[in-house]
Image 1 (cartoon, one colour):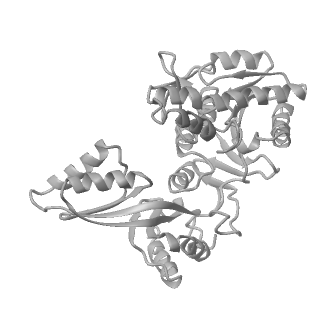
Image 2 (cartoon, rainbow, N blue to C red; image 1 turned 30 degrees about the horizontal axis):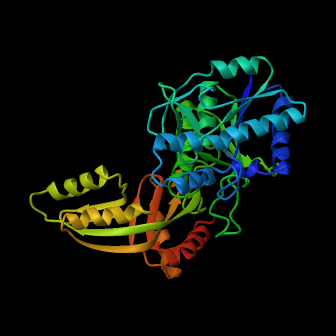
Image 3 (cartoon, helix red, strand yellow; image 1 turned 180 degrees about the horizontal axis):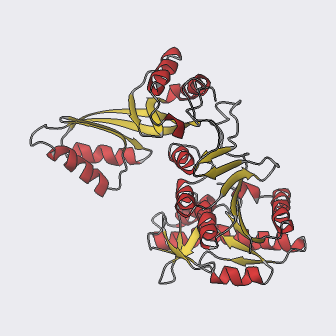
Amino acid sequence: MRIIVQKFGGTSLVTPPARTKAVEHCRKALQQDALLVVVVSAMGRGGDPYATDTLISLARSVYPDTALREMDLLASCGELISAVIFTNTLKGFQIEALALSGGQAGIITDDNFGDAHILRVQPDHVLRHLNEGKVVVVAGFQGVTENGDITTLGRGGSDTTAVALGAALRAELVEVYTDVEGVKTADPRIVPEARTLEGATYDEITQLAYEGARVIHPRAVEIARRWNVPLRIKSTFSDHPGTLLSYALEGNWPSLENGKVITGITNLPGLTQFRVRVPSEPEGVWPAKVFRWLGNAGVSLDMINVTPDLLVFVVAGEKAEKALHILKDMNLELQIRDECAKVSVVGSGMRGVPGVMARLAEALQAAGVPILQTSDSHLTISCLVDIRDMEKAVRALHQKFGL
């Protein structure tokens, strides 16, 4: 029994012509004698009538402190609307189809409303309808707790739904359709000549997603990697084959000479750098205390550098204001630099290859971009830069590494 899971984002469903293009991809899967599950996001984006952001704004306009449980109940409606509309679209093309909510499809989650994690998937209901010859259209982004409360899976949750169902159904392939042809070597709005990657490893795509590439949610890629789910990212609006994710890529071992140790360049704006002076005695006490207080307040830190008397880290978005209040209450000496961005080079080929950092520094120096801070892993080297230098840095690195 061959099963294919296809996921369509909101821009792929917002207009009748877009939905017709999505149906064409469904037809191709059915013509391959595959059983088909379709996962849908809410139609459109903020401002569109049924987009999730529109529904959330409506609730907050009535009462700004809507409880997370009720907010999830409301936010799930966008995907339910999409599921019914796309089911009807398929039926209009004489394709037998059935719509299910996330809970009806067997997505069981914890009760962390607004950002729930999937505990397990019980696909019996989906399998029964597949065996009846129907296309099963599932509302993405949502699940249900053991107690029957509706939850949402956080941003990118429909990607997570699709891959989790693919894993539970042992699908031959999960296809994530979006409005771009696949994963690019850089943001094409910054680097117009950025090319679409034919393939990348799960680790690379996860890292690209965490560092700012927004084609697919990293949680979905982590599930695909854990259960070895074949995953392809492609465009609803073209026949381009897109980007295939796998454990390893075929081809020659990368070398510094050919410049292909790097898979892609990412950029993440909206960061604030904190430099916090702490007492060096008693040894190790103050860093632990600072990190514990920030963690208890729900403030996530990145690019963390620790010395006996100085802590340097960055905080994203609106959490920076909360971090500032906490650190002031601790009477610590601090310096803040806002309007920063993180620019990262990502690639499994850099592991163990000397000279990558040197080439990165040379590229930014030649472009006149000061490096404010760095962090690295086996797959990634990240530089903190001024937001005004972000695009210049991305273009310089893309060119330097021959992408």
